Every structure is written in structure tokens, then in C-alpha cells.
Length: 160
Image 1 (spheres, rainbow, N blue to C red):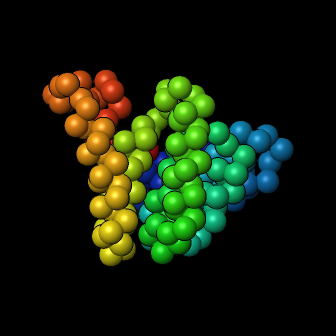
Image 2 (cartoon, rainbow, N blue to C red):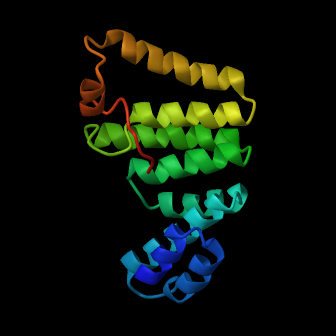
């Protein structure tokens, strides 16, 4: 599997998908899940958003991890499947609530990038609603230094 991720990291997405094919149907669920995730991420990077969305949905359907649902949100939004993205946002928030908000990415991060993707699709009213949700959170903060925001999961400098 290391060679497949090396191809992905080198932005050779077609090679990554071809190299991972043998791992898609192995009995080891962890390995096959990682293989499916690599294919989904490769499709996303190639801007095949509808395909990536379907693949991410399959991964998220058996997951309580907010990161899996974040991938659905982003791919669905960019595939112009906004209702699917909105549903995935609700599930991601439920995952965070159930975990005591210990998962990454944070709800704030998810809302921010959902809003960015909505802007990319020209859904400015819906993007503004996400901004309003974030505004209410930031208004309640007593401090807004970078370290404080990082500690509270309100700001991240890298993507999932």
C-alpha cells in the first residue's frame, strides 16, 4: 500500500488507482477501506466529484468519524448535490456530539470549508448561513489568538 500512497502524494492519481485495485477486495477490512479511501481521494483530486461523492458515501455509511462525513460534504457540494452535503453536515455534527467533540476536523472547520465549497458553487445564501453559524461561535470567544483558536478546534492550518 505504501507505493499507492507514494503515487497519490506525487499527484499521479491514475497510477495510484491502478496500484490499489488489488487491495479493494481483500478480506482485511482495514486494508480494503484504506484502498477505497485512496480511490475516492484520487477521484476528488481529479475533480471527478460525483464519483468521489459516491465513494465517500460508501465509506461514511459505516462510520461514526466526522472526517468521513466531511469528505462527503465537500465532494457532494462540488458535485452540486447540496441536499446530500447538508445531510452529511448534520451527520458530521452528530458524530462530533457523540464523541464529545474530540474528533478532527472540528465542526467549525467543517462549516468553514462547507461554506467555501458553497461559494465555489455559487450558493452564496447557503454559504452565508454557514458564516452566520461561525460568527455566533466567534462572538462568544473571549480570546481569538491563533494558539487559543487552535486549541479550541476553531482554526486549522491543514486539510483532512
